[in-house]
Length: 566
Image (cartoon, rainbow, N blue to C red; front, side):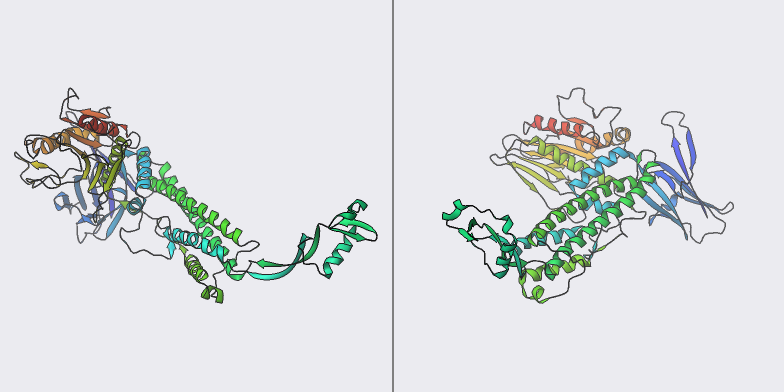
């Protein structure tokens, strides 16, 4: 069976000409853009048992599928079949499957790099879950390490750091007889000491004026003072089997980290080749290159911690050579508490293996809108905290609900004061007050029991009033937001929403911002208002990694209007 994809472009102005262009495979993959319109065709030689079409296990609407048995073609009609995806998708019909690479057309590679790097630093575990094969909530394998799972090594470091003070008080050692040059006054002189002295008479200084010196001795009628002499000494030898094994454990841990870094760098080299051949759009490979680079930094930090901790143990065990073989249980390891704990940690680190299976392959994410929503949340969060950086305040963040990425509520309260600023995530606005004092009124959409904007800023001050700003993240082009979303959102969140409460029955939200990745006709902040000094303010705000200043300035404008913060 032969698989074909056709890219459909339609002019936005009369006479609305339509262009249909076949997407030819590149290195075995059809490369498509996630929000563009396509038609799919399947040319067959043998009649398929089923004409149902699936894209990543999700069935395509049957009303879009047509089957012409005379010419042997199954067609899937016009649609955004790869919307909100990034990476590799599998298109399947009957027993045949085909691979498609989906790039993110709403984000440039530079935007994606900045956004993913920012989110990685904000919420590393979540980003790894979204962009790697490791399943959310999946079973953890504590015997392997990978770019997504460095915790076993971190645990080893933490345990060995905690053990070090106790071990420093009672390190394992043996005593040996040795000789060294010592102070003559305190040395335990024996016959070998006299022999050494006779062999080194030419190094002594003789002078008759030393005759009355209290430490002077006479040798053949001449006087001298002896400062140093060879004498026996009992030394502590730290090069025991147990201590050698401890240093060997650090050697093995560092080798694992070095192998992991080399493995990730090799993967990045392969993906960078794919990335360099791209069209400037964000690809899944470019996202993984960025995440892998961050993972290398994490691994290098662990390597630095290992090296510094190893130096401390080497100072504790001078002249000890690492034993790089798994430790055997000895009497010392089993009977002394601190060494027993070390033995268990050594076993764990020697059992660790490098997992190279979960970091490669054609994986994908279908959460681009949620990723942009998450990015917008952290930008709003940072912008709010910046407004209150000079305040002494209390910050409360609710727990993240199961299946969600973002906490439902962030509250800022002054230590001395009664006002409160809340950043709410997806609050329900219904006929009765619930998550907020916003309620529906008038004639909202018939099928809407409640509205759920992405974010609501709520300012509560009993001496003034409740003030609200509604912010909705739109992972769409600004032109589409302006033409398709702004009117609907204005009706939903302004016309059909009011603030309920005593003496506030007719109050409306002060702000409605639709947030998207690019500028609206070259304007980072586009508003419907002729004069921004009057409320309400309704508009579109750009928010991407290249420029987060528009969202910051919009939040500051809200704070100034409410006379709080900054």
